[in-house]
Image 1 (tube, rainbow, N blue to C red):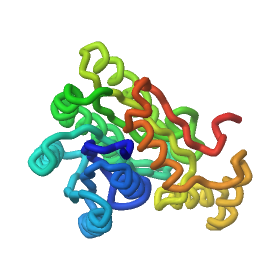
Image 2: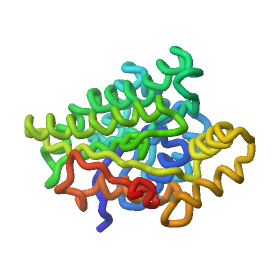
Image 3: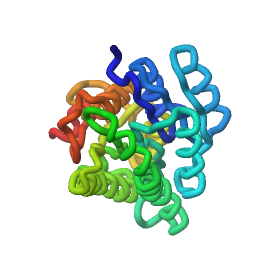
Image 4: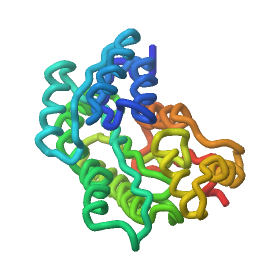
Length: 266
């Protein structure tokens, strides 16, 4: 028996990167997965690739839209009949400092990174609560935060502000759902610098802040600071997400799983 047999998962920002790899590992673990993203062509391709191993569905979802969240959840219930797992993975990295970021840029960043997590949690809640009643260990929400949500960020203080919000929202939601006996566990994952498109943005920002456009030098600097000696991969993070979503993490709620190569241990 696979660790996610019988489970249905909704993953946002799942067309590529960490979300796409999480979808792949969840299907391998026995889950039926909804791949949600604004990148329609890439998302459909990801869902098609997953269908060779199990059941997958692509859904267009702008996480800042209440109407699109409602439509996505209705589509999942119509196709699969339940929802056990929500992974709030969609996120943006701005890469600007406080003095240069505009109000419009901040509003877009917070809309995706904060409002998206709130809307997903609120609108998926009834379906997650219903599924929890029929599951030995309930349902699960996994929120993607960041090491920048635990310690200060030298590269993007506004991104850090949003991910700090996700960190404490996770803990508060976990406590609320426990108080209400909903049997929905809520945990967060905190990646360090990962080899993804967003990771490339972080490196570009670091290079710019060093006064160069030398991405290779910025990468070498990051790796030199990592006790484990390498940047993370999407699989490193996706494995942690699958763990928190599974019954293996049945006694975890309100927790922060740090997967960062040791950077915050220093």
